[in-house]
Length: 156
Length: 166
Image (cartoon, rainbow over all chains, first blue to last red; front, side):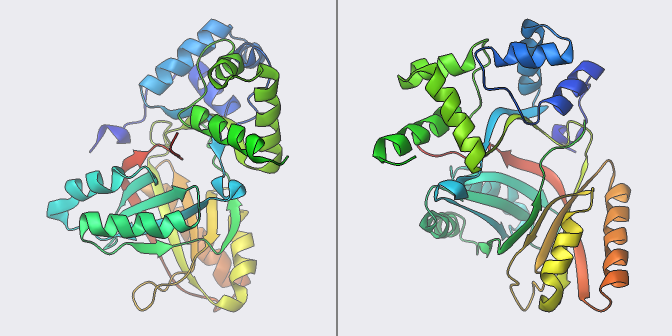
């Protein structure tokens, strides 16, 4: 089991920060100070805790989440079936592409699922083709046809 | 908002923030200095991008494993095309579902056209949610679902988010 599986040791303040700051971060001169005040913390403590949670990979990022389709770009879910004996090699080959925003191992014959994000719609096919060339494996493409719901907030 | 310059500044703002906001007391001023524009413009443009949906939100992106959601199941469903939108809207509205999309089938081996991501504190937890979704579809749309599977994730291989070239 990889380290990514172990829930991190978070205290109540860390959880309060995660729950309060998954959006609506203020647009003002001292946004961390404003957010900290609402949480009953000092600006320094909030900054230190955010840095610690980023270092510990409790947070993967702190900042804007972009919906590149609204700027003319595209997202596409894709999957491939990596032979087990080549799994780590294929993962490294896939991850090396900047167009790969996320990549997950999943338990299925299609055992690697990743999201391509590109600035132009035609970038998706180019990236998927390049991944096929790099890995020698077929990249299955699952573009979304309709989005019913997306909510990336999770309660810590 | 129009013109090459406006788009160029937005693009540079994306490049400057896609790895994260600066963790300093005045992050928008730090960005302003980097981009050579006033801090007020940085805030105004970020606000405008939020309003247009180019930015979904600004804040913390948690690693769901690290905050206790150790079971991440991608449930996939083979739904009669006639009911796909009604069922997609219904399933997407359930509290346990964080993402819900219609995607193309890839026959013969991939009959699934509805994807719903379910997060749980354990696999049993997530599987219970999936079974309750199956029961809901069977009850409200009898015969509309021809099968489903759950693909659990066992490892995050990469989670960087968008990266466009500078």
